[in-house]
Length: 101
Ligand SMILES: *[C@@H]1O[C@H](CO)[C@@H](O)[C@H](O)[C@H]1NC(C)=O
Image (cartoon, rainbow, N blue to C red; front, side, top):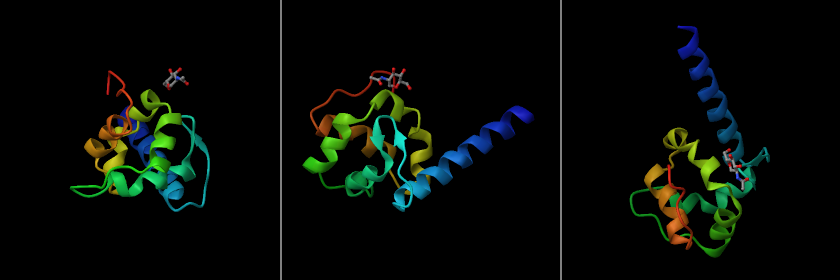
């Protein structure tokens, strides 16, 4: 159906965008943060037992719009990011999680 293929296309576009961002080749503003800053949190959101986020990562988390970032949650596993880890970040940085996430 046209509807589902459109959604898939959007997901692939998001995937390609995040891929470019993680490579550091493209910096755009996503949810209030520079996408190039996301890699500061990379260690803290990958693997089974990631280390606690450092202050640089928390600084990014503090500035980003978490409600907005929530919308990208389903794309995160594509990049080796564990969504559960990602959603634990605000708590580890002393912030409240967005309620509907
Ligand atoms: C955060 O993002 C949400 C969804 O995109 C938007 O509705 C909201 O206004 C944003 N909040 C801030 C503080 O930018």
